Length: 249
Image (cartoon, rainbow, N blue to C red; front, side, top):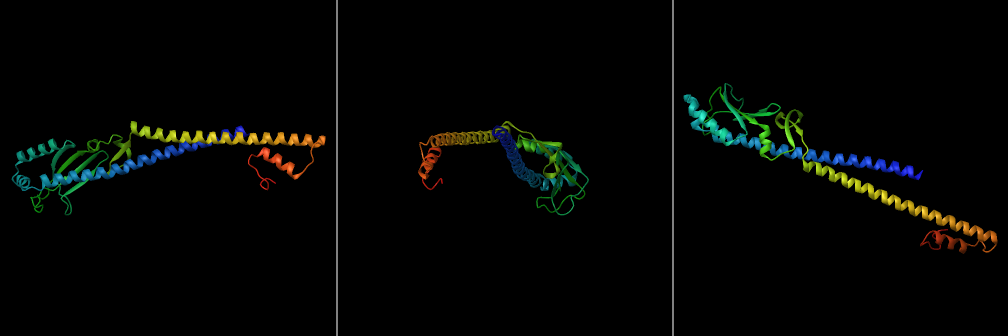
């Protein structure tokens, strides 16, 4: 019965350890996603600000649009793509940004779009009914951050800017999971050792008790000893080491 009970307890503890290890890894994954989301969003906004201030709030760009000098405009677009490899495409669209914002950021499931007003250097006089649409690779933005375990995917979970992602475990992630599992297994082993020690102590005490009772019974039956309090106390001390008068009976 004790062996069966021990097996059941071991199984339950092992299952509990697996659940705890899985929960630890899930918390680790969520913490990574949370941190990456903040850094990623800041980098996207920083890129949009740099592009707006450096290229689309310039009187030279503004004047080129007014004159229809698309040769200069294309040269600037080429320069932007050269200096910012995460940008895939730049195009002029016949739309104007609503409100007073000088740029907008939006996306589909895998790609980030930045729409810019074309203004003078003061950011005041903007070209009406036109804007520049910049297409940015969300995955390249992540790669620039040296993020290896998050992949942009159409069928993934919700990320920032309506993007989708999937979590790909790396060697480090796997090591963390194995580490938490190893800690759990060590706890199981310690539990089994303590249980075994306690069981052996109990069995040893029971054996001593039976031997003492048998010895006492034989002595009483033979008339060698008389049943006194002191005699019973001596036998109790033999069974329970360290027992003192008044602590057993």
